[in-house]
Amino acid sequence: MVDRVGYQGDGFGLVDDKGRVAIPSSLRSSLAQNAPRPDGKDGGTVIIGVHQKNKCLVAYDPGFLKVLTSRLDAREAANTSDDGEFNYNIKRGAAQGEALPFDGSGRFIMPGFPRFHANIAEHAFFYGVIDYFEIWDPKTLLATEGLPEVMTSCCRYHCMQKGIVL
Image (cartoon, rainbow, N blue to C red; front, side, top):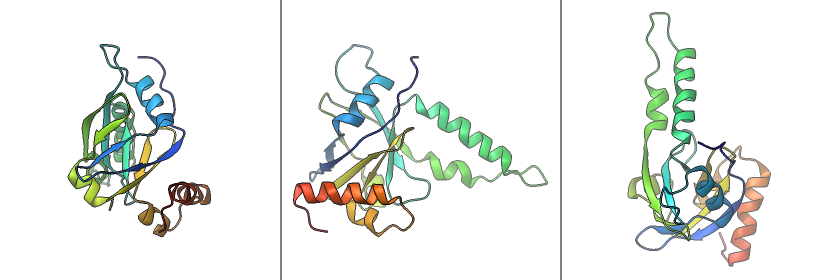
């Protein structure tokens, strides 16, 4: 596999009543580079799951699953009790996810439970965080304490551009 490219970029998507939304082009191009379709056509597979800490979703290419598993294995090893028992919740918090197809314009159908968990209704804010990208409900993002100011400002900017008042 070719070296992975990072997910940098941001964008805003409207979610229809069936949960369809489009991945912004800056993030979609990284996703396509990290996991090109074998037939050479546009589109591919994106894995969507819940974030381990925040009320948002994480999205990544199938190749990142190996990286994520390695990181989780290391966390388990570092959090083993004196009797050799490891913390089962480390992988439980990251295991929820589903591989989904996306088309050439980046459209995919967001699964019901992750969407419910992240409070995503009609708007989705996408934000690249190098290894993966996050998908947020804008209201939830702006109400979440401890996020970088640049991220909340970016979300406000996209809402302003779309004429969305939160």
